[in-house]
Image (cartoon, rainbow, N blue to C red):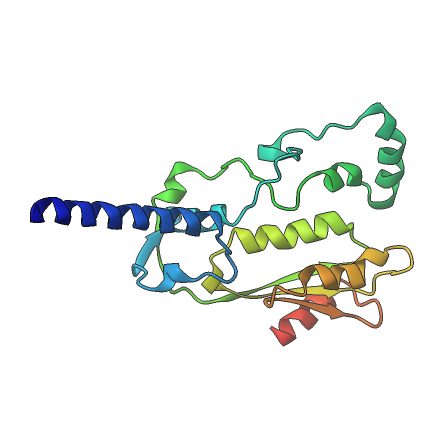
Amino acid sequence: MRKKYIIYTISLALIWVMIVIKLNGLNYNYWSHQSYRLQPPKIVAIGYFLRYYRLSIEEEPNNHHGEFGSAVEISEDEIEEEKSKFKIHQFNELASNKMPVLRKLPEKRRHSCFLRQYTFELPTASIIIIFHNEAFSTLIRTVHTAISRSPYHLVKEIILVDDFSDYEKFPSLLFPLEEHFKNIVKVKILRASERMGLTVSRLRGAKIA
């Protein structure tokens, strides 16, 4: 009888452990969760981090545009809109707008890249992104890609330097941009009061990094 009770207790405990692991996987929040740092190995390969940044990508069930590099479908009714948006940025902005902010990408790295080993505690890095009159969807996708595919502890901050964008023509780059990133503490937005150019803007971002 005692033996059966012990087996039952162990089985119940294992079931609860599996439930907790499953729930943590479903509710994973990359930028706030740091449990992987509790007892990390000193030497790691790329594969060690894959389980974390892939879990941070939330799927959009009804939006598969651009998944794994697939083509974005443009209907005949959208062709004129596609052409008009193309004139603004000289790329297919309509296709960009259709793609989800976070999407799955095909693995392009060579197998040898996964065999190399690195020290877990590498120096941190500040990511500086310069933009001027940029398309909103491509800008936020760039930032979210950097967020979701980088080890949390190695990214000190992401600095967006706005090189004097025209907010009358591109209003989404003002308040909507700040609203979008207001809850991500590592993202900072720096605004220029005059046009500075790429090099000066980059240096200004580096100065506060």
